[in-house]
Image (cartoon, rainbow, N blue to C red; front, side):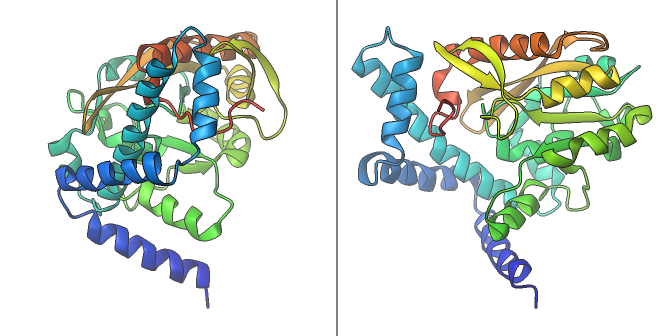
Length: 301
């Protein structure tokens, strides 16, 4: 018997049931969870404050505490939204009514994809667990007229726990249960090379701490930083466009996706320079809204 699949199915069923509740109610649960994380169990408090103090050495304790408090609140919101998202169960209308994510300028993505494939480099801003529904988030432009859903892919990193990995894999595509576009990052090279002529679009989180080869970013958030070059190097190899995909908080229950061109064709360019441009854009966004980024992970070792 497939115990991993059995356990994952049970957990997904539970999430699906709670996901039917109104998002406004789930936010109240998320606020309670935020309080538990912040004031009861002090979830990764040391990591959060060390990261913040190093990134913003000019800020005093109270300014850092305000960012940390807002960040804990954001974690609760992420949890609430992820459960709500898991309750969509193929219901794209639910996403459209809520407009939890909204493209600001989908035409930039469409234009970039006219002649070549595209890498959309995003980050742990916003709610990255909802990126599996990204194809459904354009309300002003019908993406299906320009971009084939089967040619739109979201890269992800598999979780170490096999049950959790299965649960989140299914949860990320809850609004599109037949969507086959999630690609494990370690398989991205072969996947992209095989499809290069069909001008695929890949959404990729590029701000993790590298798990293999490290490349110098320079100073990022006031600290020497290394990054992953893979997606940028692959864009250079295939001659794909590279876009920066900004995720902004527009208010509780609403995020904005904005595309900014890093290069229209990466062929012949220096992938490390493209990576540094990405991190420069990301830093500007983090400084604008610090609590919107993932401070509780060990980004710097």
